[in-house]
Length: 74
Image (cartoon, one colour):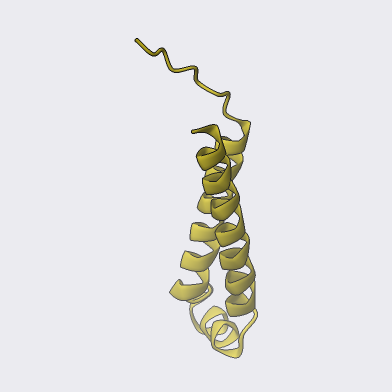
């Protein structure tokens, strides 16, 4: 069971890093620059990608750092 949790943690980390990269690219795009100029904030897509990526990275780190639970068998 611990191997499954570690694999899930690595998948979450990988997905989170991918979303962060996409979010940074969206944040630096032309549309985001225009939105920041007009409204003072980046596009919703950039914010959602960065937020989702950060949440996935945190979840992956939490799973990696979580101690293993011992299961009692009868």
